[in-house]
Length: 301
Image (cartoon, rainbow, N blue to C red; front, side, top):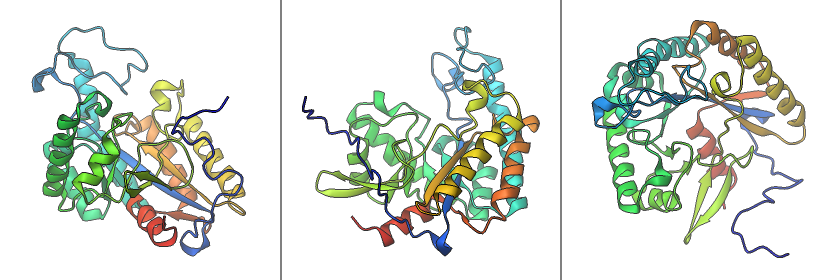
């Protein structure tokens, strides 16, 4: 049966390109902190319920109708405590970091926005209020993209050059990003371990894929309980990719959330991994924007 789908099931196949990572690295690692706290669903912001996703409720949903003060406080913990524990850990290791940031979250925590700016971390737009883009009509999505760009630039001094929707883009997202201008890439794909180009209308557009696998969401969605378990999973992933990287260098994204990894019993996994990767000569620790710029320079469409 011949399929007419536009989906790509082949990609790079058995012969992925040599990414030519800086210094001949076998693996490029990008750490991502998702700055969302303050942008989630909230009755105080006019929503009909409180957000419960990616909290200690795990895969459960809050059964509180209306305002859930418990769920609210878990998000507040991420902004008040967890984010600073993460930022201190990266500062101590002098490691680069990318923020997938919701614009309203940065507006409501200007000290975090200032720290991101002062440390030279890059910001990838994560929406205005962590909205589900796949549910938005085109005009509304266009408005939110424009609003997000202007807000992040005001908060951090630099506009976002990348984009990552909450869970999934709409069928219009990439076209609207190109229409808005100024974006070098989006990360709304989990389809590969290397950046790749897609054609959007008449223009090539770069994808720097993300992952939900090497991600601290495993603590609340994957039955992972301890820092040791998380470290083992991350470390195994790094070791496999380093071994493969002798022939096929790849990239690895590691996703973090202040209200999850920011807890004291979990942060140890992050610190241990940074101890290992920061000293490995075969690893390029890098911001996401630098991966995008590298690919644009060395792998033109």
